[in-house]
Length: 159
Length: 289
Image (cartoon, rainbow over all chains, first blue to last red; front, side, top):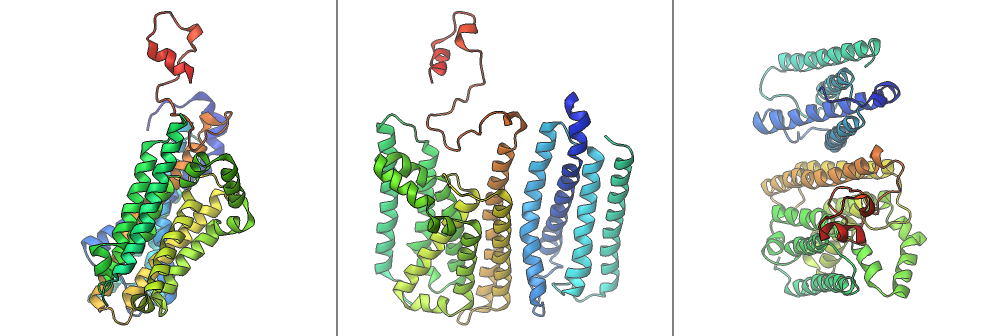
């Protein structure tokens, strides 16, 4: 990411657009997590079920909202990214920090609230779920921690 | 349930009238020396073809007994056709092709309070999503298969509500009271969520008279097929924002969404008087408009 940065963008604008860098990263991270969930776990492995008979309404509503929002998040994040690039305000660690945070955040929400509390569907069927659930949620926490570290480091050392 | 031949005739006449009306408008504009982009005309015709595929012919006949075919028709009529029709900017065409007095009446109607309420994204989303929930979770779906007039009304509603909603979110036609982008994207996400929730609901609670396997295939088609149109809607919405937010445009008035003359694709050049003599005639023509 060594595109030439306009001089005027380095000072004032780069700092005012730091929120937009994080936002673009978070939205794309959320979109990537939802996309991997759909493609890998639903379509390729067929571990996740499209629908479980016992799923309460709250589970379906949450799934529908996140499904709709993740499409929007993916596309909007890419346009925000293009916008930051054309303004010369792209900030690598803020953006990557946001991305990891978004991916981990969605995965943790999916793994705890959607899979467990709302019983939308389980990670896999006819197996002992404990190792799957722990792997799923620990990965999520690690992603969140990595994202937070990147964001904190970017804050300490601006641009 | 037998296919309804009388209904196909009505649908065919309506769609043909819409096609001829649009073509007549484009011809009127061109005769006056105006410019109407061919891709808009193509988009209008493609939209009508998508609607026709859902209303007339083999898919429409299969939809009477096959839920998956019905759902394919629903996606074509309620999502694909409206998107293509909205991109054809029929209101702009009408405003430019109609005589001045009638065009004024039309713009008054569009600016009126009822039109404002009806074309608001939240109203349109409620009409569109509410219509679907009513169709699939009440007795309407069954009644539609037995009564020709209900069949016609439901199909008209699906197309009209789909059009209103698409126009409210990504419309290119002039809309005097178009709400801000936040309202529009909230309406879009709410509708897409309602669509996805309904698809999963139908998967688990198939309508009586529909075989479970057929209901599941149809519901999955609704869920993932809807995603495809959503992708186009969200992309167009974001691209409109991206173009409007261009920092290079900040001090210039916003470009019209639909040009009256063909916009020049050539890069900006020095005005003729500053240029070295001996350039081609093409350059002089560029300056003239």
